[in-house]
Length: 76
Image (tube, rainbow, N blue to C red; front, side):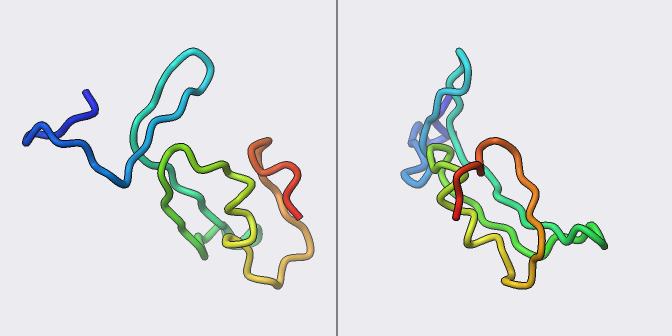
């Protein structure tokens, strides 16, 4: 269920359809250093926020190469 114990929905969470399934909540966008494997940036958004819109917020500005899944394609 998308409701909590008080029968209320979180106003900041949203639903999104992935494949044939609906998901309600949030998603984490994570920036990781390719050499150390350590997380340098973590951004949490509603589930319906597109990955590509978060790309610039995950970068430190020192990257010479960037890796990401298909959700981040098209970012500039």
